Image (cartoon, rainbow, N blue to C red; front, side, top):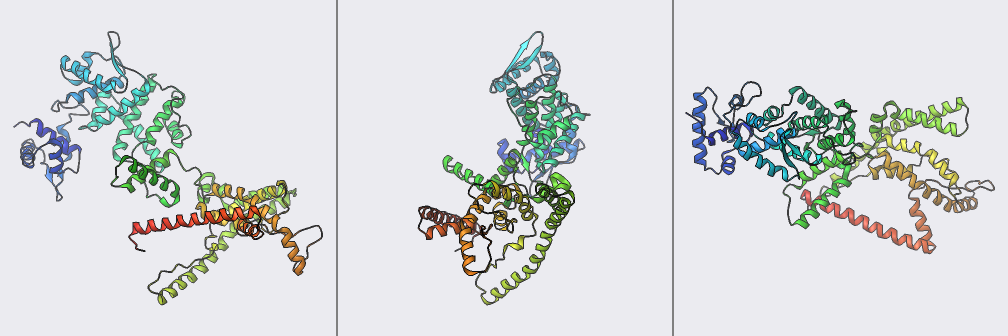
Length: 575
């Protein structure tokens, strides 16, 4: 009994693609259910006659092959059996691949030998290959001296190479065909596989199985072209700022042979590969990008009059790619700082260094500088620990209050709010407070018109705490916000200083020395206090700032209300 072409194609389909049902094969090959059932009966008879296990269906109706079926397509080692007959399109792709990865001259005899077809067939296939490469503005060139060769811009040749490798690997036993027709060494493929896996580990990502199998062949083929002198022009592409660029450079161990553009091209293959999640990411830490991507998808749907069926999955895939291409450089908290700089990121060490620096600026002697450093280190270490005691004490109070209210108002939802110390255990607060002390003092000395030299409020809790919640604990953003906000605090403190001094003198509550004033640096919502004070005097600037504040407040709460309604709608909660 001999298998016909339809039966061979069905065996290959089941072996290459798992999870196929009758309806899938019917749709792909244009066959009825009865024709497919008949074909598999004939296939199973042939398999049993030749000592192979039959193809079965599992309980869900999926066709299940057997690893032994692989020997139907392969001979010993990597040599392919002649039982599989390539289509003309597949032979055209193989010709392109042979020319793109060649290590010597390619003649017509060479191609007929590789593909095991006649000269006339190869000539016909070359015409089809010419049509494929023409799409990339390339040309298959022939000369009596050098034989067949691919001519054109190297960038376009790389694009063609990527497509050809991808399409060949999708065929039956595609990986083996790439190795055979490209004469690729298994050791080199394994080495590239190790590099890909190292990139996954370093970048905390995981490629899809398809890309994980494809990328080693892409790397081997591109590196072969580079070693043969086929390089991209410098300036065509530059990803040298990406972390994965340096990872690949270190692992390839060919720094002197590879240009910036070529290494960037390899980097691009990593950055644009299909990804899946190595661990479930925390979307809440990057709400701005997620919201921007969601808006982009909605705009695209509106403009193109299309609807994506699984927008959330698309959103996550886009986010995952953009996080690799545009890493969140400023998403940096205390833990990440410790991971980056080791012991120097520990809170007590940073406190010691900052204390010593302040002491040096203050002109202290060595003993006093070291003492101040130890005190600052101890303070930065102990503040979060003491704050956690408050947290531990306050949490039961909140839980008891919530329970008390629920018992008496069972049909109402209550949220018991706690003051900021419940989050005071986070090191970011204290780190930014101490880091910005020298900045506060410098501002106080150089700002024109400032009347305040802060001392008691140097920790600047009123500025740092709101910034912690606003930036989700992002250290660089907290530092930037503090640097921008300190001058405003100093000027507001200077504005109120005469009034506080007059109040103190009138009440006798505080004795203010002659020539000095009493000020309050670091007052809560200092800018709002200034606006209200100026508005109460009906000054032009006060009226303008008050109107702007009201407008911004309305805009803010409308945005919050809109977001709440959106979340309730997604959760199916009625108003």
